[in-house]
Length: 349
Image (cartoon, rainbow, N blue to C red):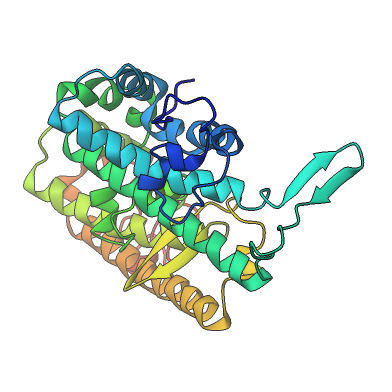
């Protein structure tokens, strides 16, 4: 594959990182490092972290133009710069755990610094550097994806916006980072939104469909995803569904996603990005904050779900699909409070 970094010197003897444009996007890297040492990590990072989000076609197009020195439009230049800014920290994230080790006939050997050139970094500094590179990588990817999202109407991103990967990044009722961010402060992170999607879908199936009935669920979801205008009361129902789903998706997601508190919100870091981020890089205060975040989401989810049920029963005549469904229980059919009505049990859990 063609990379978005290349050597800027034609002298074959000058094959160091300092003779490439990589340092412009990760200035902390040593210029004397052989570019060949970094090159496979650039390729691996691109394939593992970038291509799943932007697709091969778009990447190949801009990488080819870059390597062929083809003149780029202003939008293409900005896209390329953001792409390079994202690939660089992911490359370092991939490379850091391996740079001080070589494989030889004698097995795995540790590289020793030459006298006068410094020594191995301490473990805590190494872990902090890896953590910082990881956070920077995810932030840079989010900036890249936010830029693409904001310009998806441009022909440059038309193929990406119409791609299967992009179209599948939605649930029955959620379709964008901005939508989820309006309920949960995920720092406008598309990677966090995509990571949350399985939990969003699970929350819709577990907490929404049993409450409103399958027919009403499918009907409203079809309208939402097809862009069909909603009536005023359908908009109200949708608002109840959104906030209930968002809170329960956090409750469900917190059980298996790696949450990082950032400012007054949170982001999600891939659990495979670091070897011990939970044990060594997350302190007790941070763990407590995450637990409190989950508890608050559970409480809010229960409140919003009760509001959703109360709204449905107060407006049952406006939702004939709900009223004819297995979810509807007319008043007097059981002794439960109206907020607990529904097929199969109590819905506030």
